[in-house]
Image: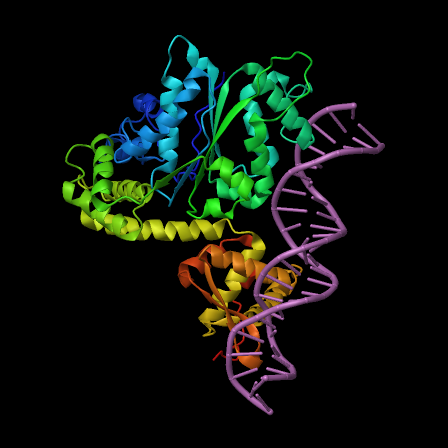
Length: 455
DNA sequence: CCTCCACCGGAACGTGAGGAGT
DNA sequence: ACTCCTCACGTTCCGGTGGAGG
C-alpha cells in the first residue's frame, strides 16, 4: 500500500535547498564571468544537513520521553496480536513532544515485522488542523483502504459528494474485511471537535461497535483505536461524558521541557545538523535557556537553532554565535507577523490597516464604532462594499486571537460598552506588508481624522 | 438603586462555489 | 439536468451587559 511520507505542520519553507547536481552540470560554460550563485555553492555552510532541524525529521532516539514511549508501547502492543488497543489521549503544550512521540511509536510499530504480521496493522496520522471535518477524516481514512482506481467507480468514497452515512458504512465494512487493527492518530483533535462537534468524534470512536447487517455470521467488528493529541490541557473536560470516558481510556500528559532537557535535545540534533565546531556548546546552552524560560517548546528551540545557522551562513561566518541567536529571534518574530498579515483576507487587512492608520495620527486606542467609521471610509476609497458592523466585530475578534490586534471589552458607563482596540504589531513593517496588496494601494496616503480620544 | 449607552455575541439563516453521483 | 453534500463567508435579529451618571 501506498505510504506517502507526510510532512504535516511544515510551514512552506522560505527557501528550498535543492541545488546540487544540476547546477554543477553547467561547469563547462563560461569560466571568466562568475555566476552570481557561485559564491553560495563554494561557500562553506555551517550546516551539514539542514533536514535534521526540520519538523518532519524523526530522530532515532527520543530523548526525555522514554517513559511516555514505554507506556504508549505497552498500551499499543496488543495491536501486534490482532487485538484492539485502548484509546489514548496525549495532552501537553506545543513542542512538548506529543506529535513526535506518536509518530515515533507509529514508525516502530510499522517497522516491527514478525512473520509478516505487520500487514495486520494500519497506522494513520491525521493532522486536524488541515483536515477538521467529519467527512474529511473519513475520506482520509478511506484513502488507506481503497486504491485510487476504486475512487470514481462507486466503490470508494470520493473527496466529496457522498452522504456521511454512506461513507461511514462503506469504510467500516472495508476496514472489517481487511482484518486489520487500525490505529488513528488525530493530532490537534480539539480543532476537529471545535469544528465538527463531539458527535463527529463519537461516531469515530464507535467504529468498533458499528453493526452492519451482514448475511454471513462470524464476521468480526472493525478494530479501530484512536490516539487524540491536544495542546489544550482541559480538552477532556470539554467533551461530552460518553465521548470522554471512551477516548481517555488512557491519558498521557507531556510536560514542557526543562532547560537541561532542551539542551540534550538540541545537542542531539546539532551534532548531526552542523559542521563540527560550527555550533559551540555555549550557543546551544543559550538557545535552550531562552526557550526553557519562555515555554519549554522544543520545536521552537530547534527552529531558533536553524535560523541562527542561516543567519551565520548569510554573514559567511564559520561559527554560530550568541549574537546570531539574538538576531534569529528577532527574525522569527517578524517573519511570523509578516506571514500572518500576508495571508489575511482582504477585509481583515482593511481592518488592520484601519487601526494602523489611526494609530499613526495619534488615535492609538479606538472603539469598535470608530474603527467601523474609518473602515466604511476606506471601503469607499478602494471601491469595495462595506460589511456590517456585526461582521467587523468578528473580524476584530479574529485579529485579536491571532495576536495582531489587541481588543478588550470595556465599559465606559453611559459611554456604552465596547471593545478598546489597538495594534499589537510593529506599525511600519505591518503597514508596508499591507500596502503591498494591490487592492489597498489607493490607501497609501490616506489619513484618518483625529478621533475624540478615549478616557 | 435605576437608566441607558454602544455595543457584544449567540443563533438562525442565506448564498454561492465546488465537487460528486445518477 | 438534477440531486446531494460540504464549506466559507455574510446578514439579520435580538437578548444581554458593565458601569458612570442621574
